[in-house]
Length: 426
Length: 194
Ligand SMILES: Cc1ncc(COP(=O)(O)O)c(C=O)c1O
Image 1 (cartoon, each protein chain N blue to C red):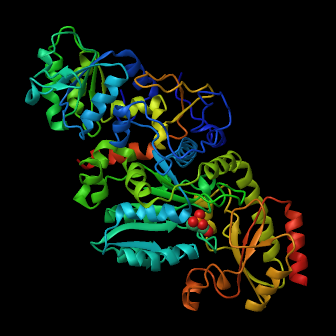
Image 2: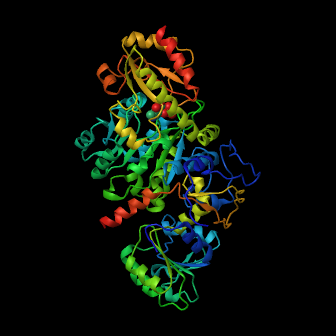
């Protein structure tokens, strides 16, 4: 049998899954158990010592979770993945492998507001110092590099404004600095953008959004591209030095090009504890099976809604990179030719007041703090997700006071436009 | 043979075909990668022979160490070399003195010597470089998927019942779509720098 390349949709349905060995169940079972029996004492010791592959305890891994991990790794073109309880948990676990107290990482200024908070405040108490740079200017990342820089973090499509990041330009900076590039690919999903193809070393997701896709389960995932040499310069002791927690094993030497994913599991997840529940892993896995169909529809609807809004007299500006007039349109054509995603912002001529009014007049759009649901969603970032930022930082992150964010669902686009029409006229 | 990128069928053919494996540089220290790989392959039913002149007189999981390939004293199908790239050539030269010749020279993850590979291939041997047989076996049988690793294989058949020491089926359909081309690229960049 020759090595034939299956398409993305085939992988979305099949990768990682196989009929259950005992029952023949075709759908992946929910292995709702905390722990797994050992065959004998030697088997137990081998598993604990990382000498054998297998299940021990659901805080470290679970068979339902493993199917989800392999599926996302396959869709992203990575060597391995680790699923965790949320997108935020994925970010903590990744940086814990890279950062020691006093170290720095450079992050794009345009990020999900929760990530800006996590990096500025929670991580500060660990002694991990974030340095902000402008994702529209790769040079600002280069200028921020110091001997203590350990990683660069960007979003492929940035939340909330839906701007597209020039991943290759920033990957070149990371390569030159000898640090890994971490890309949060939540808003694009691998259906629209595969960051590893553009030079990312680590991809993270909030599975809570488009990958799960139905607004019903929290989850996060870390994908190892297998591209980074962790042994260089002894810069990353979690990966290249003998680990006392495992009798002196060196993770990179033992696990080769999926060492980072293993470190995240056996040093990060095991000790920090944010495991994904098997039930959530199952829900998200089921969601991923229809990812290509949903993303195509999300993007088609988003483009139609953006075009409608751009022509509306009450609208001051629409920030959707799928529109030809948008400054990010060239980057969108390069990185996301199948569609520019379904999260974007627009501003109203009536300012803050008009934004608040619109949100309360909508009948089909749900006013809530999430994106990437089958349902269409709306929020006013300045008073919610980005409320902890001062006005200058709000504007820089794309959440100015007059801005409304939409996450376009997979309903009929005519109904979405009709709802906006009545709410804008009200 | 393209040593930057092996077809799964090539690796599968080797792992399905060989029965005895002499591991040069095997360590009795149970946190060394060679120990992990030795134990794993022994549990999958391969006839494993530890080769390391520093440990003659000792056993590795019940198998006595021998000092050199010449001391094995019986035919071996595959030589798995757990040494740095700079120590590969003498081992390959020694392997090519054996009668009968082994069928496969395998150089461990991180180890590569293109001249030694060419010599072995000229003598009719198959060569794998910069790979771990434990990882490849785990990947092709999809056992490694239990750790979230991309096996790059698909199957709609019922999975085998996992039992200790079983030989898992390696006959799954290989796919390129989850292909880790990026990591091959990285390995290549590393070689370019070296
Ligand atoms: C781009 C992005 N990254 C990360 C997160 C955090 O994910 P979670 O809520 O699953 O922790 C979010 C959530 O909104 C997000 O939009």
